Image (cartoon, rainbow, N blue to C red; front, side, top):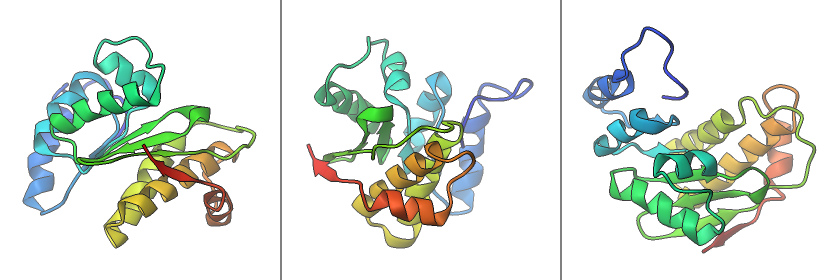
Length: 174
């Protein structure tokens, strides 16, 4: 589930979908902000993906100035029920926060052509990889590659571009 709710849908729409998802034995991921995100956390989403600005807004904080502050804010989402937190930070890379670890991933240098869809690509990269491998670190690396490759493309990234970008990414435990 991602994005702002279209006009006409109730504010509870995402939360209302969760029982249907669970009835089918599936996990869910969510990339939205504000109360719509907070309302789904008790149902343990597999992944939530705020960017660093959205994360600060969510908790009423000013912009975070360090990775440690951002990790602490991400841990709040874990405490509320999220299983994994991905935080995109544009040129400063991305974070993955889990119950017991936090990682920082670099983003490669490149010319941003179009940021539309980069966050969606990041979430899709993590989700698709995790669904087949259950490897958090590999899923995080693919997530960064997908998001970055899309940002460096005029449209959604190709597999070749994703693989090219993935080879340049470094993941470090914080």
